[in-house]
Length: 279
Image 1 (cartoon, helix red, strand yellow):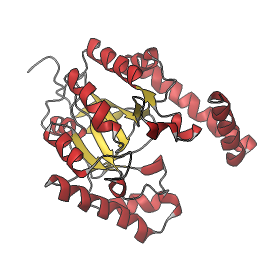
Image 2 (image 1 turned 120 degrees about the horizontal axis):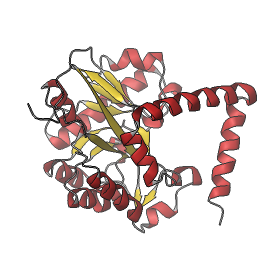
Image 3 (image 1 turned 120 degrees about the vertical axis):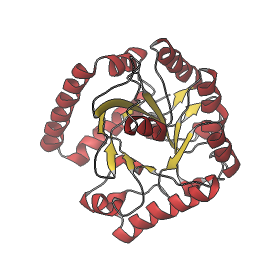
């Protein structure tokens, strides 16, 4: 067996969560300050990919990584690069840079936004799939799942799945939660939706066992425009310390939200973000 293959039943891997990559499009000039927090420049993204290449990372589509785990052929230096929403930069900017380094991405598409200005077309999605990138669902309209009915949740899950399967001509097994919010209702409904894996916005690593019940909730590290290369390197190479820092962060946020209240906490955070982007 090769050195980079794990023999145990548990495999730990990291997923990074990206959104748009701005190469000068007017589409990104119209975004709110809160949205711009998650948009990085083309130069930043290229620097990220250069780092991943130097670190010897392999970046297969998510579903390919999961098959490798099931077949006990998982490479320890695996890093999943996921991209939410289905913005056109995924095709025009992100994919060419990924392919330049021999990487592949995992795209989570809001099916109801396909063919709209600023978002990918059906043909672009089909082309990405043919070039080896993963195409998955990110709902139909990107709602807050905690604010809609159970019937509406099921509609979002099933309609987006059917739409993408019609475009690709194959089953779509992975889903990314819009806004990252969910409740106990979602956990019950997702089991009957036809998806095998659900990507959340909760930060952390993924330890997946070969034998388990479907579906499986996966964690991701969100990339922001102030994320530094040293931050990425730390996430990849210092898992124990990162887990400790995540635990301390969760405790701190829990205390803050309980002391000042969730609404006030969100207002303060929004104020900081707006000040950051003030011209």
